[in-house]
Image 1 (cartoon, rainbow, N blue to C red):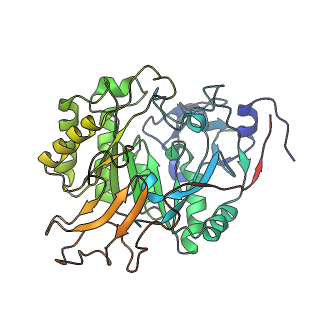
Image 2: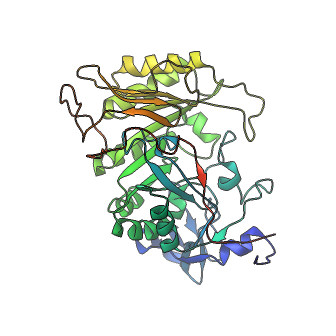
Length: 378
């Protein structure tokens, strides 16, 4: 049975709890500094941060808890993670809200729900245990926080992940990378795999999104230093970040950080507020792929154009060149990995691998919506 409410803001304020102390710093004058994302908002009584979901009430920083905006069991390749549990499903959940406002967002119905009335996303009340039970019922090996920006709801993800790890599940974040060192240190005991969207390589480009390139680059450095398994995605958008100079800067930065970081260059399709842009062509992804390889990255992947870029969706051994994981889109067609070594030359392949993995995607590589919780109605 649905619950009535006046506004989305009203109901979300009722689904909150006190912030984790690691993510809240008391300041003079009754303000609190939020450390959940790179904005480091200084929030006064009765006000919220840039994200609009973390706010101060009664002198305490409060944060979202106890709901999901979206949840599905889908291929881990969709995140995308290619060097972690290939062929497996991930129980993926998200809340509402974001600390950026990307006009090309492809999860805008959840990420921009609080800013954009056209999103029309409503929360479903759910417990951490219910989410973990759903993951186990679906046979998922991994739980991932995504769909909105998970940093701004990191305390809730941590609650879910504590329950998940107690059941033997691996946990991951799919994030815009606008982090602080404090939030990454808070998450590290619970999160093993982390994907960052590196959206462009100019400060001006990030400024139009409400962020800073320098913060995202710092996040990438911190993630490596703290020992997360890291994969990076660049959505290649015509006229925004597809010039060879930007792509080259991104590839060189990642290769200098660690040439084993998988870099996914993926195709844009017109969405949200960028309806006038054309779709990314396969030739653009092939150019980005070549740039990544020339920069020294050992694992570069094209995405969102299944079967249109040859074998560049698949993983090959950098030692002997043998095929390790054959993919088409989000589907694993063949997985030859045995543990973390190439079966032919025994070269170590960086990633998070299973000793006895599935040899192909058992679900056919398609997402499965999960009905869970008690959804509010308008």
